[in-house]
Amino acid sequence: MLLCSDLYDREGSPYGDAAGLDWSDNDVRFARLALAAAEIACGVRDLAWTPDLLHLNDWTSALTPGYLAWRGRPLPSVLTIHNLAYQGLFEAERLPRLGVPESAFQIEGVEFYGKLSFLKAGIVYSSHVTTVSSTYAREITTPELGCGLDGLLRVRADEGRLTNILNGIDESWDPRTDPYLASPFEAENLKGKAANRDEVRKEFGLAVSRGPLFAVVSRLVHQKGVDLAIEAAETIVRDGGQIVVTGRGEGELEQSLENLAARYPDRVGVRLGFEEGTARRMYAGSDFLLMPSRFEPCGLSQMYAQKFGSLPIAHRTGGLADTIEDGVTGFLFREPSLGELLGAVYRAVDAFRSRKKLNTMRRAAMGRHYPWQRSALGYKRVYDRALTGALARS
Image (tube, rainbow, N blue to C red; front, side):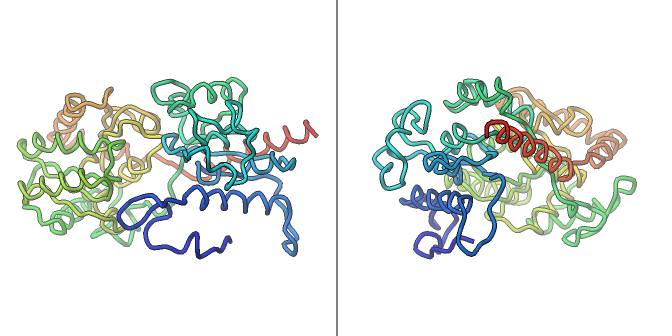
């Protein structure tokens, strides 16, 4: 455990204050975290333990293999990229304060268009890179979704040092036993789903309706396509549907959602923030989950929704393409546009009007399995490879 109240004991999130603004010293905060991991790897007095391998996640710990390399103490390491868009970019003048040598500030090191990139450091100095779905692993090697690092990632892929390992979900996502639900249910007996739908409508103050219920459980940011969901809401409501939304994010999107709920108080319910029980009931009670993400490295919401019999409507990208079978366990569309999203919504509503087809799709979705054990085996193979490579170089 790394204890430093000056750096970490603050109100707000790990990244910013209560207003959502990044802490001005985030470079120091996360460089110190990475340095602590490197120091432990080098050996700490009285700890009597050193790791054989380091597993790092995203930019926040990605300087660690760099610190080890700069100290002449390389150790096998695996970097998992959960979202390439967050890179940890800081001004070059911060290098001395962070203990990054000037010699590392070059194209084969930590330099990224004149700035220091924590994430690039991790890609350059780690033994192996993983990401969280097979489609996203391909996407990040393209100029469209590579965020300027596609060339480096193509090299890693060609070297066999970029691997995809799909995320999993834990066993608590089971509608038969979930204590948060208004009523349990299972794939072969879906009656309890109606009780959850009624509870969600009550929680969000919606009118009683026989129309479809759509849910959005998401960070309310541009990446997630929340603006597209807001645009589609007008059509959904006009055609007899209802929408419930929970999440936090960009102020403009939050305000737009609140305005939408004010215009349609009995058709649209919005709860800013996140409460786990409410989210689980939304998955269990909704007929469809709107997930029009512009890109999605893996996504978990579509997995949760499927386990609870809510069919995801999603852009065919990243992990969404890998976990949703179009027309079988959900609905996919090709481009992140209003027209494409509405096309998928119309197909979903057609399925809703056929109880037999809807329940067949629900059962197929609920039968999907995303066990962490499978993911763990994938990581074990990557660890073994990284360790074998280190032995071969020694």
